[in-house]
Length: 339
Image 1 (cartoon, rainbow, N blue to C red):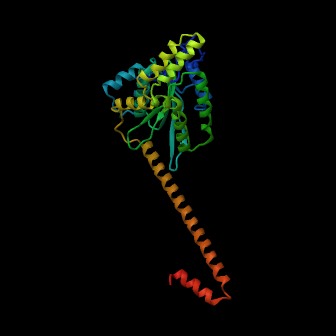
Image 2: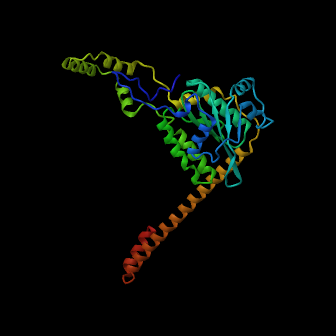
Image 3: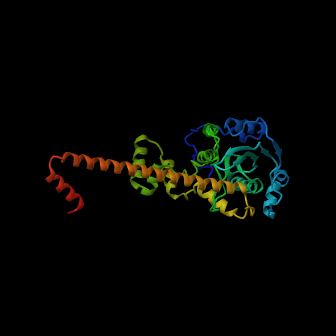
């Protein structure tokens, strides 16, 4: 199970595309570097964390004292020693407000281990700290954004972006997130943040590659490669092997699929407490849907009234045109009554 190599193919024939890795994965990455990155994304407004500690202190000292953790959770909590917590900020709900905060952590692993560690961190922190938690992870190979998910069905309680491995991709998502400050309404903030970080999670092979794989291996293409090689005097064995491997290699699972598998494997990490902020969110969501339904009903009522008015105007026009012809008026009225 792997996902870091989805978008990068091994170079050949002496050509190597130079890709600048995201700066934060360097060994010398500091809390100041992480803070600067979050400032550039518009997620925080302060120049230093409110709290800099290990995960144990965050969970046991600053978290809810009534929460209970399993031995596996405790072992994980003890393994994370670098966490930055930034000041809470509050956003408007229809009834009340939502406490929000940004939490950054250094996860010293890569690949699937990093994915599992990030999800474990999210789930445990969501147990310890109520409200809307925004996460930023720096692993050995990439950076990831994440957040708590309000899902009353209980199937998904957190999410992650795909691993961001290049500086260009990281700066692009920073630019998109910088628009978050345009609204003080939590629902707008929440929906926009989730949309930005998960928009590429279902990215698989591009359309043309899917078509090629559905058609299957084409022997005519291999013959054309042989003919071209003979004409140019070039050995085409590597190209033929590359083409065959496109169909022989096991398909790589999408990041969305991998994330769901990891979440399912960690479903035991959950809170048994009643979360006031989750109740506020659900009440706000129900009120929003009720208002949308009422607005739509009002729109349909106005539309019906306008249509009826237009129909009545049409009737009056027809009747008025026959005022000087009683016989034709009687015929029209009988016709409308079905007589």
